[in-house]
Image 1: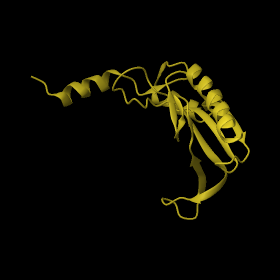
Image 2: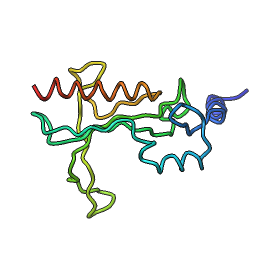
Image 3: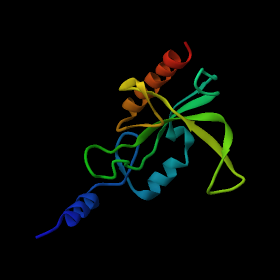
Length: 144
């Protein structure tokens, strides 16, 4: 009789870890090649002037390629939207002396009265539409 851990391991072993933008499974080498190409990775990018809640930022939606559902259930989650400061202002605790782009919250698409730092998607179409929706919500909720 197998235990839950063995069942989970079997499930994870059956599902690929890396995916292309169309959801096709990739080998590690092909994933790495595509990941180096910023044009391939970028789904959406918009600079946003300072609002009543945030300094000047940019909204970025990218292909991650690694399944962020980690094979546990459902389709692979391989795209992500986040918002960052335009300027590198925060010092990295892991690498003293190096600065990075601070993250900022934005209206959560499913409930714009809530805020989040990240939204993830399964398909390129969802990611593209999500990026446009979040940009519109920022304009409506922070620039009016």
